[in-house]
Amino acid sequence: MKIEYLGHSCFKLTESTGTSVVCDPYDDSVGYVMPEVEADAVTVSHHHYDHDAVASVNGNPAVIDKECCYDLPGVEINAIKSFHDSSRGKARGENLIFKFRMDGIDICHLGDLGEACSSELIDMLLPVNVLLIPVGGTYTIDAEMAKEYVDRIMPDVVIPMHYREKGCTLDIDKVEEFIDLFDEDYVEELEEDGLELMRSDLNGETKVIVLRRR
Image (cartoon, rainbow, N blue to C red):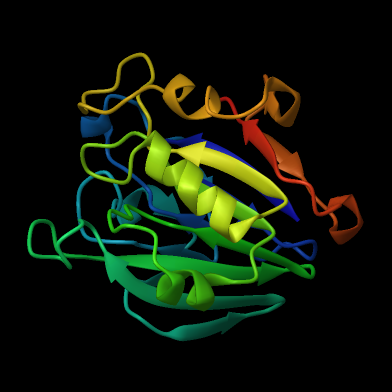
C-alpha cells in the first residue's frame, strides 16, 4: 500500500490493486493549496473547512462522513465516533476516527481527535500498524497527549499531521513539539510526500516518520 501526505490532515491511501481513499481534504483557507487528486472514496472526520472539502477530490468518490462500516474492493473502512474536545463534544462536537485495512495493514486516521486517551477508546482502535495522528493542539490533542496515544497504541509507524507549516493560518504548534518527545533514533524526516509499505516491513518497533507536504 502507498501513503501520500497532501498537507494538514489530508492523506491519500492507495491499496496495491489501485483502490484509493482520500482522508480529510481541506480548502485553501488553511493557507495551503489542496493538490489535484482523484480517489474512489473520501472520508470526513467532521464538517469543517479544513477537513471536508470533498468537492476538491476528482473521480466522483463516495463520501463517508458517518459512523459505519464500508467496503471497497480490497479495502475495509470502519468509522468510529469520538470527540473533538475533552468535554465529550460540548465545546467542538464529535469527530470520526477512521480505521482502514489495506494489504493486510491496519491504518488509523484520528481526524481532529480532542479527547483524552482512555482504555475504552484504545480498545476500539486496536490493532493499529500505521497511526496518522494530530499533534498541533488548540483544536486537537497536543504533542504530549499525542505521545500518550502512541505509547498506548504502540503502532509500527506514526505519521504526524495537523501541525503548523509555513503559510498555515491556524493557531497550532509545529511538528517539532511532537518529534522532540522521541529518541532521535526513532524519528525519520523524509524529503518525500509519501511511502510504500508491505506487511513484511513492519517489525513491531514504533518509528515516527515525518512526510513533506506535496
